[in-house]
Image 1 (tube, each protein chain N blue to C red):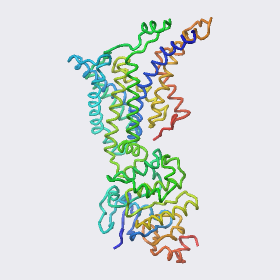
Image 2: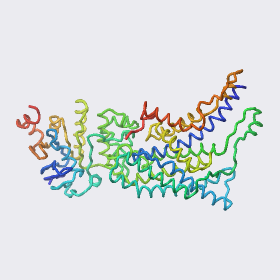
Image 3: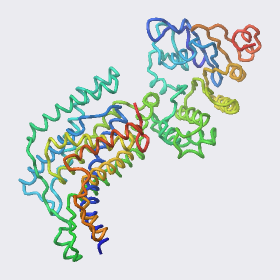
Image 4: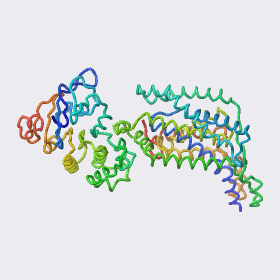
Length: 234
Length: 335
């Protein structure tokens, strides 16, 4: 069984289901990427994994434990970290305070974790006294990822981490995400920049209308002419 | 010498009264701004919360006075403050439990919560009148002056009088201590930071495991402390009357909004801007002008507005800010 196993997820916000038997799995230290057209339910699938969407069917297990009934807060305690797409920092608080708030549920000394985050994102150390709301888009994303890393999650979920940043910053963020994965943290991420994201993906999911259409390694999906033609623009 | 006389007159009639009034407004505005930042609504019941807290303080003061307690030159009301704060905190926590919690639960729009707070205002209003009545109550005891007009004259030999009342100094010192304590709490403690985080981004705060109920509780308790201290200082300075606390809501809101509602620094700056405008515009400048411009005797009092219109000053400033810079000087948040 995979480290994260979200199988046959079905559900939605109102009466109509958005997810129709969607399955996502991630192994330890691997990067899984969800791509697909607009309205395919990519973000919704990720929210379902995190417990922000009521499920009518299916189950979510993390490290072998069934967490289907847990609230998002409790899932954080079980080792999930979530970086929302927007509004993912505390804008009038300093970078350091943002990281402290990330570690709010921890009672132990978290200074070494903060040092690790600063090692991963050196720019944040320089700007640690500055308010997160005054940073550039890319730096703000780094704060958001850093905040989520403060609980030492075993699975990190990123909802379009490169939305609205320049291509150079995007490459840099992807490099950092690979580094995070190398430390043994599993990554599940939704991406608009499908081609670049699949290049770093150990596993790629193409979702269409709330269901799995293609599932393979990132490389294989990129090589699949059908996937290229339909979803990656040739 | 004339310049010195002008300065003394200005200090006596404008700077000293406006500073102590500004400190009272700042404390009141801090309470309003805190509720706005964390609970996201304008709390119209704040003035009557101040009245209730002050009422309790007065009752306890009377009790202490009956027991023969005295603080020497300081008013006994300072000793009664903790009891007043505790009683007000219980009232606010009770109100939250019975009223506001329901509206948070159904995620009511901010404007609905404002209307709810108007209802709460009327209830608290009545409660205070039951508790202590509607009459004017002077409860300041201890030494009345630090510098009286007579000692000033003996000290300096100047014709122009200057008085400094004990309550004015107590107001400014207490307000300064409270503000320092509040900022230390908000910027240095884990609970304070979690309140700011909750105010900044509620969803992310929940994700980070911050307990919203605890944040709300702490916010009400701090608001109770700010309201009781502000109300008591105001009452010591100007005597207590339930109705004036209802009126003072306007300058308090003006202070909070001028500074940038939701921003504590803005609340303090706003308090002083409003108080100096109010006192400055309703002061008769004839005397100061007479000192500064020799040989000129103006016909009128050089008073821009009668003191009866002092609330109009807050109102006009409020309007101007809302039209030209709705986020206030320090860029507050707008829900």
